[in-house]
Amino acid sequence: MDGIQTILKFLINQKTAIGYSFMALLTVGSERLFSLVAFKCPCSSENFIYGLVFLFAPAWVLLVIGYFMNSRMWKLFTGCCLNPRKIFPKGNSCRFFYIFGQITLNVLIAPVMWLSVALLNGTFYECAMSGLKYPRYLNTLCSNKSVRCWEELHKVTCGKTTMPSSESEELKLTLQAQSQILGWCVIVTTALLSLLTTCCARCQSKISHLQMKFWRVYIEKEREKLEQLFQLYATKLSERNLTSFFENKEPEAFPMPTFQAWEDASQLYSFNSSEQHYSTLHRLVEDGKKDISEERETMLDFVDELERV
Image (cartoon, rainbow, N blue to C red; front, side, top):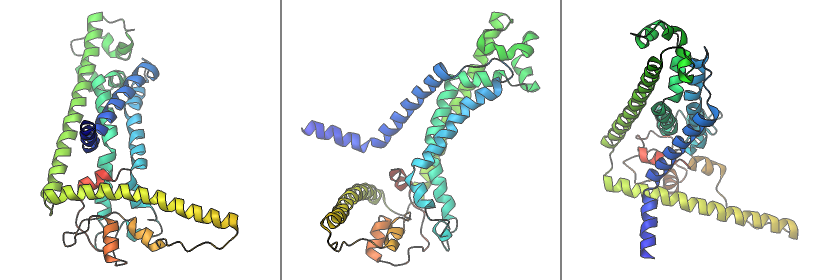
C-alpha cells in the first residue's frame, strides 16, 4: 500500500511533465495520421499552398483551442466590455498585455509541438517548397542539376518526374534536410526562450523559493476544495429549491455570496509582497470588500501553469 501511495504521489508531483509528454505523443500520432490518411500532395502548381495549409492550419487550430481551454483567458475577458477597468485597471494599464502574453506563451506549446514534429517529418515542407516558384530559391536548389529541375520540381515528391532518379532523390533529401533543420531551429529557439522567460521571472521574484513552493501547494489545494464546495453548495441549493417546489412551502434562507463578491473573487491574482495573500479569494476574505484594483506587482509564472482548468 505504501508503494502504491508513493507512486501516486510521484505521478501527482510530475503531472505537468506527464501532461507535456502526453501532448507530445498525441501530436506525433496526429501528425503521422494526417500524413498517411489525409495528406495527398497534388504535385502541381498548388503544392506550395497545399503544403503550407497542412503545416500551419493545424497549428492555428491548436492555438485557438488553447485559448478556449485556458481558464485565465475567460477570467481576463469575462465582463470586460461592460467594465473596461477590469482589463485596464487604474494605474496599471499594461497589466492586460503582460497577462495576455503569459496566456499566449502557454497556449503556444501545442502549436509549436505540431510545427516541430511536422518539420522534423518533412512531408508537408517537402510538398510546399517543391511548388515554390521563387527564382533565387530555384536557382540554389537546382544548382548543378538538369534544366528539367526548374520545370518538374513540383513532381519530385510524387516520383513522377522525368529527371534522372539520382537527381530526383537528391532533391527530396535536400528538401527533407531543410525541413528538419527548420524543425530543430524551432525546438532550440523555443527551449531558449522558455529558459530565458523563466529565469527572468524567477530573478525578479520578491519571494523565496520555499514560499513559492508553499504558494504552489496552496493554489492547488484551494482549487480542489473550491470544486468540492461548488458541488456541495449547488447540490444543497438545488435540493432546497426542489423541496420547496414539490412541498409547496416557503424556501429556507440560503446564504450565498453577493454578485460583487463573485466578481471580485473571479479576478486574476497579482502578487503583492506587502501582503501575505496567496490568491484572489484569500485577499478577498482577509480584506473584505476593500478595493482590489490597486496596482500590483507582477504575478509569477507558476500561477499561470496552475490556472489551466
